[in-house]
Image (cartoon, rainbow, N blue to C red; front, side):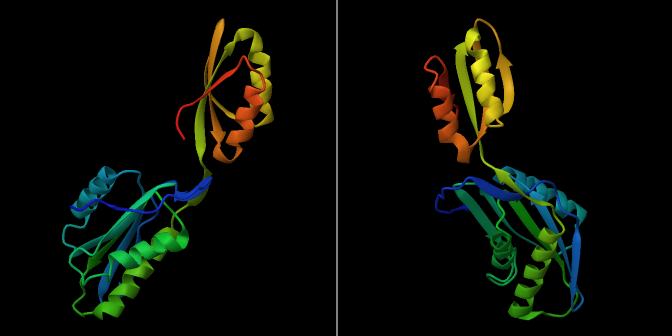
Length: 212
């Protein structure tokens, strides 16, 4: 299996994704049935697991075509026509991921052949329509990119730290409050520079960015 295609990195502060699997959708065209699924994913391994599960559920289906994209600033995508004519299934499905602007999402369209050939144009339309219906049946949410930061400071500076956390509405994940304190917070990436500056204004507060 070829690795997923790498998209160019982008400077972004938020992204759109589906937060739970969408409802199963069904599109019919000239006797053929197309079942569509939208599933949240973050890794290639998850894609394999979902496909295996759906192949058990739809054991008599002829084609399991899909497209997925994962990652935020650096994104990866893969498409599969699964035996359909080249670019008649995977790319039309992927086009809907692009149209809806979502990532960390897998779209699978399963076809039961109905006895009448649709032609390449008909297949493109059927797979595109089913993918679109799948995303429309899903809850798409815009999420902020959150950066974890660990703060190191003396207990006497706790009130200063908590004031800044409250001012910037930061997410407090964990805290270890002793003579030497450690606090883990999540900061919206768009606010990262201003939040770091606020903490570093107090020279006795050490700021550690865990990942960016």
